[in-house]
Length: 506
Image (cartoon, rainbow, N blue to C red):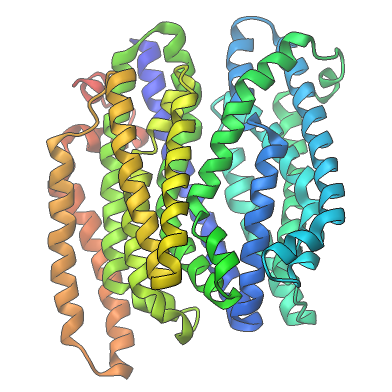
C-alpha cells in the first residue's frame, strides 16, 4: 500500500508539474505573433511546412528513445545498471548515424522536395533547419533518462520551457535586427542547440557520462531497440502526422498563406494536447512498475481520475475557443479571422483526441504497442482521404471537417481497446456532467458577448469576458463539479495529511 501511495503521488505531482511547465509553450504564441506580423503569412507558411517535414524526420532519428530508455532505466534499477549504459550508447550511435544521413539527404534532395510541394523557396529553409537534428535527438535521449527516474522538472524546463523561450528570443533578435526571412527556422535550430548543451549538463547530474562508452552494446540491445523502437517510432511518426495531417494536403494543394492560417488554427487548438502530454511521461514509468507488480486496479483508478480531469480542462478550452475564437485569430492579423469556423471544428476534434489519448502510453507500456500504431494509421488514413476530398471544395473548413471525423472514429477505437485489453471502462456518467456544464456556461457567455456590438468598446469587453469565463469555469467546476476524490488528489500535493487510500478507492 505504501508503494501504491507513492505511485499515485508521483503520477499526480508529475502531471501537474508537466502541465505547469507546458505553459512555457505559450512562448510559441508570441513566436507565431512575431513571425506573422513582421514576416507575413507567406513566410510563416514556409516555416510551418519546413517544421512539419523536419519534425517527422526527427522522430525517425531518435527511433522511439523517449519511451524505450525509460524502460531501460526502470528495469536497470532492479537488475543491472551496466545494461542501461550499453542501451543508451546504442541509442546515441543510432541517432547520430540517422541524423548524419538526414543532413546528407536534405542537402541532396531539398530542391526535389520543394518542387514536389510546389514551393521552390522551401529548399533554403530545409537546409537551415536540418542541422538541428543531432541536437534535438541528443536532448531527447539524455533527458528521457531523467524521466525514467520520475524527475520531470528537467524535461519540462528544457524541452517545454527553455527551448521555446530561446526560440522567441532568437527570432526577436533576427527579425528586429536583420529582418531575416529564414528567421523562424534559424531561431528553432539555435534553440535546439542550446537545449542540447543543457541536457548534457543535467544528465551528468544523475548518470555518469564516462560509463556510457565503457562497454559496447550487445546484439540483445540492438534487437530490443529494433523490436520495441520500430513500432513506437512509426506510432510517433503517425502521431505527429495526425496532429498536423491537414497541413500535408494543404501544403500541396493550397497557398502558403492558407497554410499559415491553418497552422495558427492548429497552434491554438493544440494547446489542449498539453494535457495528455503532461500525463504521458510520468504515467509511463509507473505503468511499467504496475506491469511488474501485475496491479491492474491501480491503473484503472489513476486512468479514470486523470481522464475526468483532462476532460474538464479540454471542454473549458473548447468553449473558450468557440466563444472567443475570432478574437484569438485576430491577434495574428485581420486576414486570419476567416478561419474561425475551421478553428471551432478543429478544436472539437482535438478535444476528443486529447482526452482519450491517455490510453496510448498505458497500452504501450502494458505490452500492446501495436494498438496505438493501428489507431494512428486509422486516424491518418481517414483524415488524409477526407482532406483530399474536402479541401478542394471547402478549403480550411474541409480540412477541419476531415480532422473531426477522423478523431471521432479513432476515439471509438481507443475506448474499445481500453475496455478489452486494459479492462477499464473509460466512459463514466460524471463525464456527461462535465460536458453539460461546459455547454451551459458556454451558451451564457456567448449570449453576453452578443450583447455588445460597438467595435471600440467590444475589444475591452471581450477581454473582460474572457478572463471572467476562465475564472468562473474553474471556480464553479472546482466547487460543484469535481468529485471529492478529484479535489483530494490535488490537495494531497500541497498537504501531506490527506489519505491517498480514499483517493484511489473506486
